[in-house]
Image (cartoon, rainbow, N blue to C red; front, side):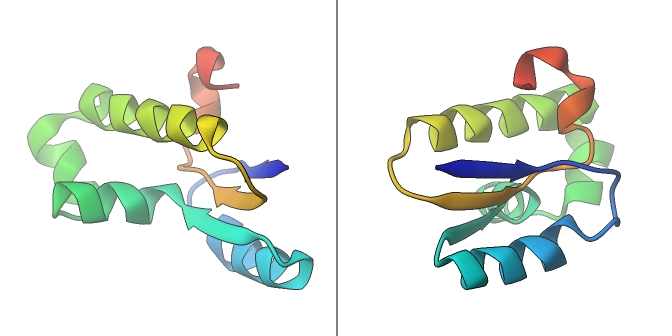
Length: 88
């Protein structure tokens, strides 16, 4: 099972997600952290130097990866994920 948390940036998706995952014995994934690790830069820098469309493409790729994974996950999405209707 996969539970995706959506909401405005800074609203607590990651904090709540970690607690929920621990309580349910699920794995936790923070999409922004995954992107930062892969890109070697903070989200703000990625937006500034590569643009929002590039960042949103990276988010979409992670959603697809997680969708293909087996197991139980709580996923903290980026604040803009629900603004792209095909992500839902």
